[in-house]
View 1 (spheres, rainbow, N blue to C red):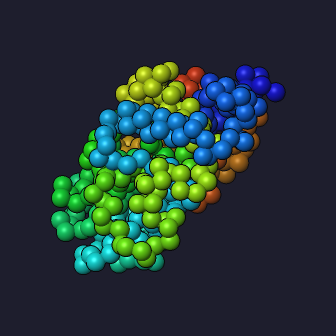
View 2: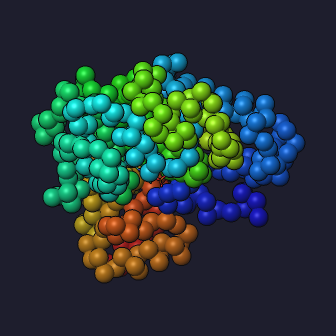
Length: 370
Ligand SMILES: *Cc1c(COP(=O)(O)O)cnc(C)c1O
């Protein structure tokens, strides 16, 4: 089967790994057999080849161009997923610090972050949404940041609950560290206001196996000397240009294709954001205009443009709804196992027609159920 003959990928609303653009899948399909520049399968190209060095360099260039950042940031492509960063960050940047870092607890992924960070550090939780079951994000007046914290860590988009920050937060004197795994390169950000950004590939950028880490050069001085395993020392990864040991060549190649698609086909992050807003508005408007048959889960002001979470007024229908959706060709709509319900993930690769098709299906399902 060719990419074009499989319509299912176009209606894949999976929370992650997420849908990738059709044109990228076509190039990947070709490259598995014969990558055009080398004439070899992408699965058998050396990570020490000149070709791969050029791939690493171009991914960096493309990401810098998309975000508008310069040489003050290192762009790393690492393994271990976002989860490894949860522990590698406190291991690297807290040596000799007397004050604890600030953390926000805004949902499922924040809890995972905290669980790992607490193993190696004392932290201060500035705000937690646990008592309200993570249905909203904090307002500015609820956030009392420390001016002395070594850093602030938060999650820009809570993938499970469908909550996304639509503003910059933090203390101006404190470096911002942000897990952007589920909304990286989905919209323009003020990148220079972050000290450390990270995102694994498998929501918006490519397949699982590679995690992008962007960190300001001056952070490298805070890493303790010779106590971390070499692989976990960001300085080694910087010096080796993300080629310290065998990197995930295939995953990085797909990220390259996605960044080219963002630059050349979409036209940059502002254009991507405009498309993503239309997709999310289409679905949220449908949820809001109904009679309560479908109910959005997240507070309106904090709704995610990437992950639309909703429930049915009659939760006993959930399994029936999901089965009917799948029969109609809509995949991956089940909510995360931690909270149930439904989640439609609208990552960059998912198109507006797919969202319109989902709304038509949901309309018809409600009519038949009503
Ligand atoms: C999916 C997700 C993760 C998990 O990352 P792994 O690569 O599986 O370790 C972390 N953070 C956020 C915000 C996510 O959405």
